[in-house]
Structure formats: structure tokens, C-alpha cells
Image (cartoon, rainbow, N blue to C red):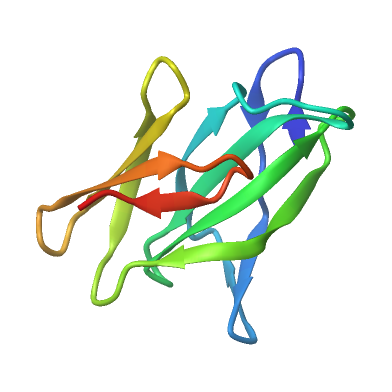
Length: 116
């Protein structure tokens, strides 16, 4: 749930490939620049246990809905944190396994698109 007043996001669990990861969400960044009819923007959360970034649309009431592609997987990784740039156009994910920072562009539908 996304609290529109405090701009705080709460996620209890992420399900990926039939397994539910609780307490796996380490850091969340919200990107509110993509608002449109019926929603206010997008939210992203990392799961270090699953090695993924979960992608959500934030409804006008703060409810989260998974995007059509609900996750971006980062093979052999342990993403620990993420951040969005000030424009909400890019998201950066830090991996504690390799020390790499993965860079993504926020697509028109909110999906993260890897930069090469």
C-alpha cells in the first residue's frame, strides 16, 4: 500500500515463481512522474532473497497493482537498494554480490528497461 500523504510504501511480501518472500523488501523507490488516468505513478521494490525488482502501479487510493511484467530479475545477484533520479526517468539498483549498479530507464508503461 502506498500512503499518498506520507509517500511511504509498505509491502508485506513478494511472490516470485510460486515462492513467497516475506521481509525481503529492503529498499523502495517511488516514481510518481508516470501518473495518468486512474493512477498516480509507479513504485519499485527490491528483494535480495529473490534477486529481483518488483514493479507496481500506484492507484489513486494508494493500492498497488503489479505491472504486466511484475518483476525484473537480476541473475546471480543480491540487490540491496535502489533509487530513482529526480526526474523519475531512471532507476538504479545496487547489487551487494558483485558491487555493480544496474541502470534502468522507466518505460512509458512503468516497466524498467535495462540500459546498456
